[in-house]
Structure formats: structure tokens, C-alpha cells
Length: 160
Image 1 (cartoon, rainbow, N blue to C red):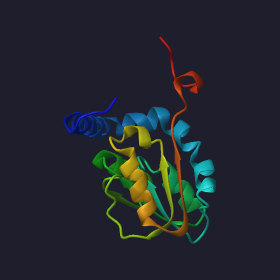
Image 2: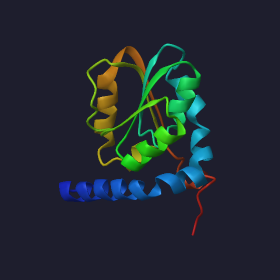
Image 3: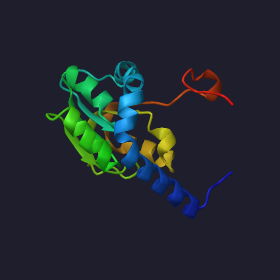
């Protein structure tokens, strides 16, 4: 099923409005669960000391924090001002900025790695975000992302 531009716009507005309200509650209730996958995602992206990393959909900055602990240089990007404010409070020495995953505000070939933790399912055009991730990667760079498991495999998911 294909959605119209109007429906995709409504979905995007719904997501943004929701995250403006949910930043702190999500962090308090799900943050530790979300942070658990950061190490594996950074491993998949080859993140190590001295690498330039973009964390797309950074939220409270769980992957950005893990990359900083590895000695990487990190920029965290999120469309939610509330998420960026939270990330800056939690990690005042890190770099965070507001922006669009589907239209990244960076030059071509700016990063050695792009990571995105649990962001893809919140995007109306995930394929555009993937294209943007590859656009900002340097030759040989890696893109790694996480998504929640399908409902029957997601242990945190309740069924009706």
C-alpha cells in the first residue's frame, strides 16, 4: 500500500509532535533498553578512536555517548528539539544539532560512519534517509542501524 504525500506529511507531523512530548518519558522508561544495542551498532559501523561519526535520530544520545567513549568525534542529529535539549543536558560536551534525517545538513563524504538507532520506523521516507547516510559517508565508510524486532520476536511488545 502506498501512502499519499498528504498522508506522509501527516505521519511526519505526528512523529515530530509526539517526540516533542515524549523525550523525557522515553528516556526514563526505555532509555536503558535503547542504549543496549549501541555497542553492537558501533561495532558494525567500525567506530573507533579518531573516526568521524554521525548519529542520525540521536534522541537522548545513547549511541553518540558510546561513540565518544570510544574516542570518536561525533555529531548527534535529531528532528526533535526536545530530544536535542535532553541530549545536550545529558552530555554537555558533545555536539548535537536539530535536523532532518531525510535531508542531512552536511557536505558529501563528511563522515567515516553513520549510525541510526531505532529511527527508521519513525521516518516517512526511510529510503531517503538511507540515501542521505550514504551521501555523507566517505569512501569505505559504513552505515549501521537498528530496528525493533518483528512483533512476535520483540520481548518488550505486548500482544492483544
